Amino acid sequence: MPEAEAGAAPPRAIEAIASYHAHVYFEGAEQRAQAMALREEIGRRFSVTLGRVHDRLVGPHARPMYQVAFATDLFARLVPWLMLNRRGLSVLVHPNTANERADHLVHALWLGERLPIVNVEMLRESNEPEGPLAPNTKPEEGA
Ligand code: ZN
Image (cartoon, rainbow, N blue to C red; front, top):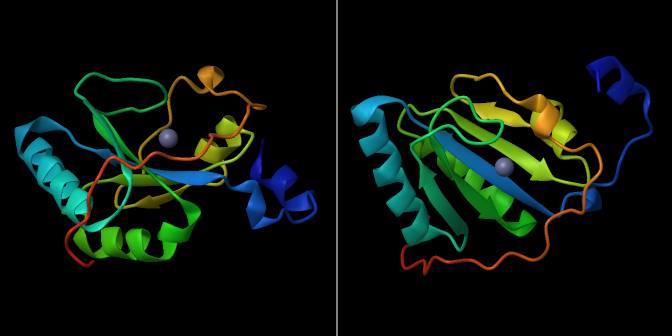
C-alpha cells in the first residue's frame, strides 16, 4: 500500500496491534557477537519471546537476524531501551496486525540503518494477527 493511500484512510485504533516484533540484524562475526550479547541482555530484562538466531536469510529479512516478540504493554520500555542499547545494530520494530505486508513496509520503525524488506510477495495482506505470546525469558534485572 503506498504511503499516500495509507494517509487517505480513516485513522485506525491502536487495538489493531496484537503484539510487536523487533528484528535484530547482524552481518559478520563482530556484529553477530554484539547481537548475541544484546539478545542475552534483552532476555535478562524483559519478558519476551526470543526467536531462534537465523544465520541464513529467512522471510522478508535482508540480513541474518533474530526476532524478539513482545506484548504491546512492553513497547514503552523495550523500544527506548533498544534505542539506547542496540550496539550499533539495525533493528526493525513492526506491529502485528492483520496485514503483515503493511506491518513491515508501512507501519514499521527502524533503529539505526534502514534495510530493504525482501520477498515482499511472501507477506500476506490479510492474515490472522498473532495469538497471545508465550514469553520464554525470565527477567531478573530492571531495564
Ligand atoms: Zn516480524
